[in-house]
Figure 1 (tube, rainbow, N blue to C red):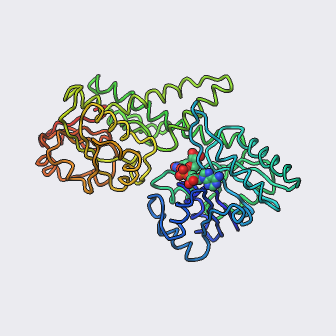
Figure 2 (cartoon, protein in one colour):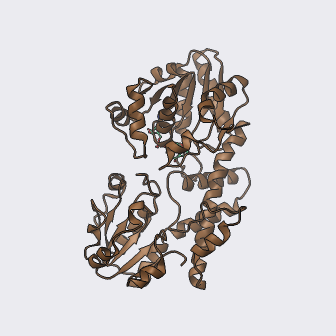
Figure 3 (tube, rainbow, N blue to C red):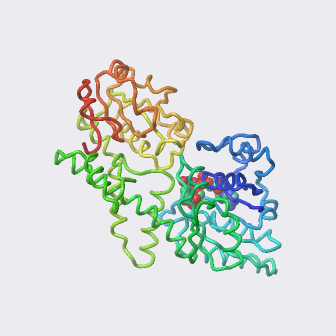
Length: 439
Ligand SMILES: NC(=O)c1ccc[n+]([C@@H]2O[C@H](COP(=O)([O-])OP(=O)(O)OC[C@H]3O[C@@H](n4cnc5c(N)ncnc54)[C@H](O)[C@@H]3O)[C@@H](O)[C@H]2O)c1
């Protein structure tokens, strides 16, 4: 099949590449000429395990191309995926300007049947807006052409995006047009050879499904963070509590890890957008408003512990920080808790020397103007003479460091662990003062 993907970011590039991998011909469009030039030159603008190689393979096979030319991209695919950003507007609602611009571009250039598939995360009712934008633009052109609008929200996780796309738990298709549904079934057939994974529904339910999924996951995190904070006061160990409740199949073990709060490009903005959507339609989503407030507070939890140890004024202190990305296996710094933590530590006068295995270039771009923050190329050098080590992202490389070397390098053996990476009793046994979350 011939497919166009509009927007070549984390979702668009993975979608386009995985669709090419199973034999389709895919044209990826982006408005960012630097991104497209990089892709055309064989580079990859994001870090995502396995993507590099898969892009190269499919480009070499002639199945994957990149362009900034809208007319060319619209002409290419019968199926047009929209995978552009939907950032929060000032009031927290999703800003649909990029989605609607992409829809109008399709309508401006199309000359036959198109299935417009919205893969971006969008509020309920966006399908109708996309349909109206296309109809309006076609009317301006004075032409009548058939098209369908489908909602196909994406559930991939950054850091495991290829695996998630190639072996999805479910493929949600929201559509009311039989021809479009048939095309989507054919498109996704290679991804469900083992068993049926497509859940067909109406467009509005598909749109809400995506927000509901992210809102539920964010809720579990905030719930556990609040319980962790309580466990600390009560003298309980949240890790044991987590295992104790996770064993119940109605609850399960996933997404119950307390920490420094959720970040990334999805949970924060999607929770906000769903709350805003509720507000707009006269429903106050009280649970989700609390989820957001709890998360904002949690991002400062590690700094609170540092302040308890060193006092409110941190001038003259230097801290080593491991992990900048909002989670392991990605370079995504959007809404990363590290940004709040570094801002607060340095606002209080501290110096921070940070290390991240892959996100340093992104971190430099978004927080490089902070004169009290420097970046290290390896994980051990920030520790030299530092007052303490703070762990913010649970990269595998941090799981079992050489603790003798850590102790020798630090001014004192003191660790603030925002990800509960280590066994507290063991670490204390070898002489560390260890502050984790909820233990
Ligand atoms: N990142 C994730 O893990 C993830 C997972 C599921 C869903 N989503 C959703 O997918 C959507 C995209 O997210 P992302 O993380 O890939 O964003 P991104 O910012 O990485 O990529 C979006 C791309 O779209 C391009 N773009 C904007 N307007 C365009 C236009 N009119 N024509 C062509 N290109 C255009 C931008 O230049 C950018 O490269 C969002 O709605 C997001 O909520 C993201």
